[in-house]
Image 1 (tube, rainbow, N blue to C red):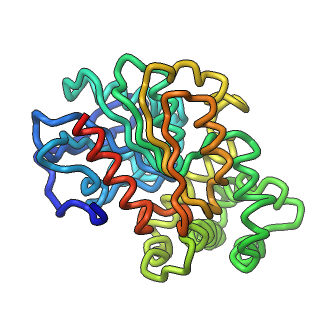
Image 2: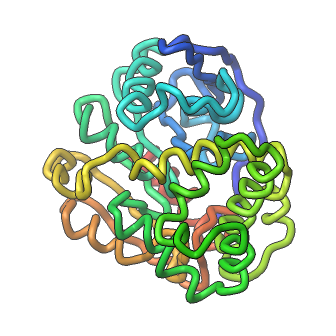
Length: 314
């Protein structure tokens, strides 16, 4: 099946108080008796969209969407205080318990793969398996690939449009510099930096230029919310130890997984997918030719829907 499932509306939704002044937005769609699946969005800071429900057969899945702290409809908007990886994992576990779900399938893309893996490693007994798109292991070299010494050599014009806002010395740690500016006293410069950050990600996400896809990254308010949270995480190296996910790969040993990665992904370098696959014997790795990073690309979209269909059948 190459297209997404028809659009559906949530059956119920709400905000869950997770402490620290944060309330996480959640919603459910599909069938109440279906296979529970949680959609783990990327970013950090992007939030879910109505299309996030459409990878799953609504007659076979109980679909849970949630916006991570500060993202999407969660409150407070774009809040970075008390916002780190360990707290996001705890929020997911609190949400699972709140919804009365025994075990759920984890479905994540990009940063969502990082968070899904962290959750599965912390709570393997609550995880049915993982479907991952555009693996991001969160190591220093993975962050540096996109923000310092990798993607910029493939998309030099996009990189220069971002780098022009910073001093040469800042380019050695662009996330830290952007984090400082976005949270600094010059609100106009903060907005410009956030928009440039968001534009850079959107421009590099697809194999071929896609103006329609890029438009979603160019809304100034959305760009500021996204970039504020994303730069906060990247500047703090995702609040992880250098090799945290691979160091704990043995915790995935009993979980099945499908890894889907665009051959020409310029945001999350493809070697990350192979490295994870080799450390996780029960995983299946699918390379998608003629695709970059975005889940909107036809080959990736088809593979994600097929993986979800297969999991529901099994």
